Amino acid sequence: MMADRLSAAFSALADPTRRAILARLALGEASVTELAEPFEMSLPAISKHLKVLEKAGMIAQSREKQWRPRRLEPGPLKEAADWLENYRRFWDESFDRLDSYLKMLQAKGGGDGPQS
Image 1 (tube, rainbow, N blue to C red):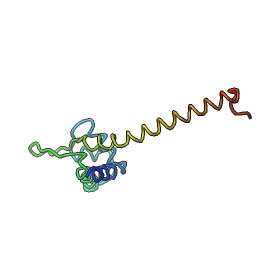
Image 2 (cartoon, rainbow, N blue to C red; image 1 turned 180 degrees about the horizontal axis):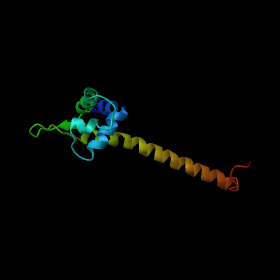
Image 3 (cartoon, rainbow, N blue to C red; image 1 turned 90 degrees about the horizontal axis):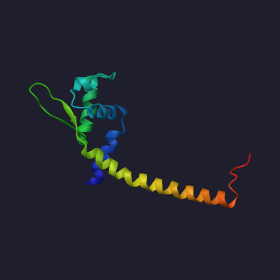
Image 4 (cartoon, rainbow, N blue to C red; image 1 turned 120 degrees about the vertical axis):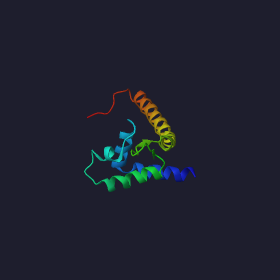
């Protein structure tokens, strides 16, 4: 189940328009028209992007009289960030080991560094 949610999240995040929509919604609720403003595409095209984000659970729609604003739902983004965090730790540890190894090589070679 977690893998399916992650797949949906990363699929939704794969598109720059959807990432921009999420960035806008991080500032607060917005209507479809407001979300469409910065893009040179039709409202139906924006609506398709919103459906992908809604299906991934990243946004939700509320209803206030005639206004139906979208809002950010942070849960799936947190799950994706938590999943990526494991790999960040892996790379940090790998770079730390590489740094230690390079320092050891410099100490053995007198610390002169590469010669030109």
